Length: 76
Image 1 (spheres, helix red, strand yellow):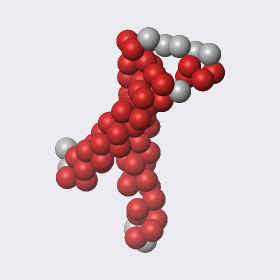
Image 2 (cartoon, rainbow, N blue to C red):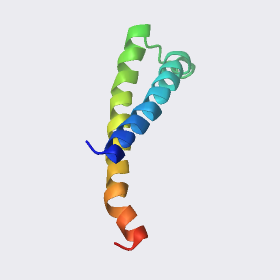
Image 3 (cartoon, helix red, strand yellow):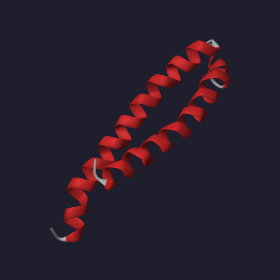
Image 4 (cartoon, rainbow, N blue to C red):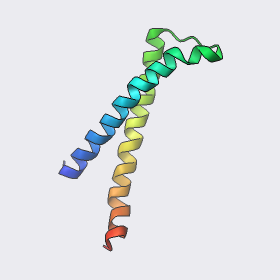
């Protein structure tokens, strides 16, 4: 894995981890406002699913832009 790819993974994972905490809190404490009352465990499962999706999305998009947008910007 190149340094750039390793940094991409670290950035995407950090971003998703922060989102994990925010998402779990929102799922557990805010969904009841709309009448949805997930348990502690269900909130964790919902959050884990969105965590995985967020991580993969960020990683793929960053790789896409690194591969295609950077060469266009740099004139390659």
